[in-house]
Amino acid sequence: VKNLIVSGDISTSNNYAAGIIAYGNSVQISDCINEVNVTSTGKGSIGGVISWLTGTGSKIENSVNKGNISGSGTYVGGITGSLPKGNNIERCSNEGSVKNNNKSTGGITGQLAGEINESFNSGTIEGTTNVGGIAGVCSAFSPAAKITNCYNTGIISGNSLGIGGIIGGLNVKTCLADIKNCYSIGQISAGAAESGGIVGNGQSKITASNCY
Image (cartoon, rainbow, N blue to C red; front, side, top):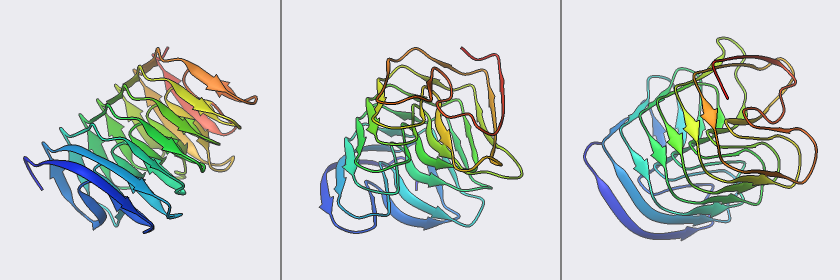
């Protein structure tokens, strides 16, 4: 999918909801803009560009979400709901608000096991547990999930554990994340402990370098 601009409104109860692609396997998306406001009451995955990825080899690049994303999904993000191992996001941004009445909410992706490079969030991100400016929750084991050259300027808020400027939290204690050359200057608003400017809940093996 290339050079696509979409606009409008989507309201659904489906478990997979997005402005461009709801469910994809090994997809290539470049130079796309989503202006669709996506609302879903489903308990699955919600994203501005694509809600759910399966398999490996997917790449989303040079794309922007400007739509407002809201719902009650397990994974909710401005670009994608979930980014599994072996998939990449590069030079993407979220400018819309992302609001989730469930856990794992992020400006770029709700759940991260792949890699995000040179991307940023400027939208307001609101959830419950594990809310992050770039990624809501990291669930990578080996290799580590990677966030490189990314930043957040949006307001990040949650009413439970794991509220962070870059990553909200980690799925279990053995998850791995590598964060390099990232910063967050957005306001962090947390209703409980375990919040941070870069990582909210850092209970496992996180490597962070040149971040502030």
